[in-house]
Amino acid sequence: MQIKIINKSTNDLPNYETMASAGVDLRANLSEARVLKPLERTVVGTGLFIELPVGIEAQVRPRSGLAAKKGVTVLNAPGTIDADYRGEIGVILVNLSQENFTIQNGERIAQLVIAKHERAEWHEVEELTETDRGEGGFGSTGVK
Image (tube, rainbow, N blue to C red; front, side, top):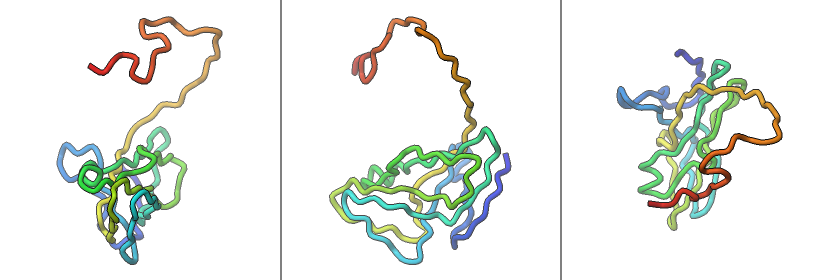
């Protein structure tokens, strides 16, 4: 699939790091380093603008290493970029650690996964088909 992209950053275009990678890394596009204090959140621009085909979304997801090692993650993960959005891709980062985190220009801050999606046609009914699980949710199937 080909996707149109405008790159207004000083970074290279996103690329898949390995042949089996599901996502590409998004890099911070900053004129100067930005400090993210504990429990603080900020939107970090990437300098990237994309045009997706209808029926395709881009999902902004955390980078596991950044979350595990630094406690920094994407706040609304996964963030959805719709096919009709033409603005800059921004990443909402939050620092869940006890230490300041400095974001540098070009730093890999999130990943972007391209995915197909369906549009539902809602059909209102009076009741739903019964299942063994029923209304059980939020851990109702146990932990082990």
